[in-house]
Length: 248
Figure 1 (cartoon, rainbow, N blue to C red):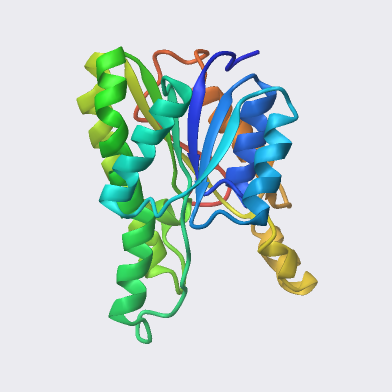
Figure 2 (cartoon, rainbow, N blue to C red):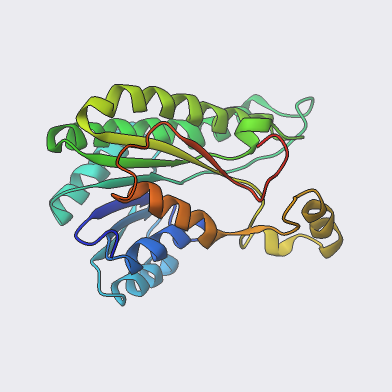
């Protein structure tokens, strides 16, 4: 198994891409610490599902965009699991609007959650990975952060910021064998896209060379590769998972 005896923190892992990553990592023998904003029935279900695969799994209620909460979260995971080998920064939100109607609050909220959470979690985990002399950080960006998108200036700014932040950290951390890479999903089929009308879905898919949306597990497989020891010399990579979308 590719991640046997490793411990991963995965943020925003009770649904969508984050949950797919947790499932894929658990199948490869990884112990999973995951989080969401609240400890609810869904978190307990995910905790049990992952544990049923034979790995240690624990969910935590954390606001990862809060500096002190992120610090406390990582410290608690260390206490519970003993070491941390992988961090997947997946937590994120959208609040779309054309710029002419976008409020300051909308911009601050999206950038504050999506970008600051990556800063807070990376800052919290750096001393641990630095001391142990190894680690893999996989940050979930978006093709929107590469190419931009209508009505998503705040989201695009946050995801572009993740790319710049990650590339800077990759340079700083490389000497300690800590790799930092960015996965940039395109149009991915999740619970949210299930509500998209068929006609609109078909229009979107017609613009993708592969003529279909991606799956959350296809994103998870890319994260698995980057998190594993299969690529010890890969860092600072931006990897679009988008079926060949233009400009990605």
